[in-house]
Amino acid sequence: MKPLELVCPAGTPAALRAAVEAGADTVYCGFRDETNARNFPGLNFSRAEMEESIDYAHRRGSKVLVAINTFPRAGAPELWRAAVDDAARFGADAVILADVGLLDYAANHQPGLRRHLSVQAAAANPDAINFYAETFGVRRVVLPRVLTVQEIAAINREIECETEVFVFGGLCVMAEGRCALSAYATGRSPNMNGACSPASHVHYKEEGSELVCGLGDFTINRVKKDAPAPYPTLCKGCFQAGDYQGHVFEDPASLDAATLITEFASAGVTALKIEGRQRSRSYTKTVVHTFRKAVEAQAKGLPIMANELQRLTEGQTTTSGAYSKTWR
Image (cartoon, rainbow, N blue to C red; front, side):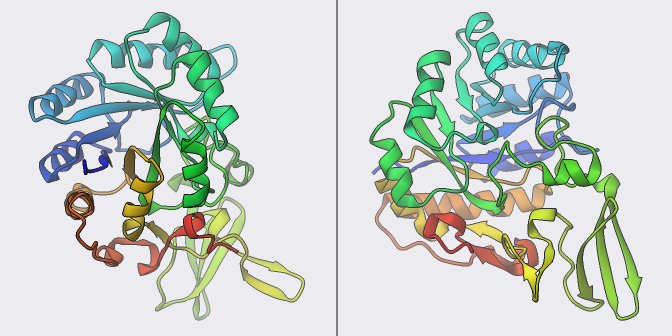
């Protein structure tokens, strides 16, 4: 059995090289501006770095996908269109897009450039996916992290394009492309400005025996000073509802679906995606190397080791998320 394609993150040229050397089939990355959904200071690629990195990956047998997966501002699409044109000019193997206007632009102006549908489009049923495939020539869809493995299998039976699923990393527990919580708290939209819970709005302070984690004007979590402090994202914060106080949507935890790789293959999935463009190249190297072994083991019918990467997860805690319907 052919191993599933391993799609790996790179937030910097150094991380891209680390991913390729660790065994990535494909690396995804973005330009250093608001056209991609990991628009954090110190990350991403200049135009020169992108061109050089694509050449580096190709010479070593890996592909590069350019994420242009935020939504253009009304009346100002030029930055996003230029990103599509530059990705094509540099020889990218595909662009990852979410906005229908930008998909239309790419289909008409860069028809030879392969188009993947970003998870930010939140296409989670056959009708939606087939619309994108038939209208804009989308060849692959990245499925949102709200589906069970059985639902993914049912979708694959009714579509013609490839599917890609997240297998490890940060877990967005809201429907991607639809989250307004971070925008409400910070005034910056993750889906337009490219940064969920931007670091410029995160703050910590000590109150008595507690460490208070805040985002904008909101307190997101309170933990004991000696306890692990999760990064303050609203969807994983503590809420009080009546007499209940706790994590309403999901505990601070990372996705780890390594043990489901065989089920993904049986469900017709083409590619496994690792999240983490904002993480270090050491993280990238370790995670990619581990999943390289896992996908090859699956292809040979060998067992896949569980919890190999727990020390790299949020709060050292993992979940299979909606894949196994373990969410509240």
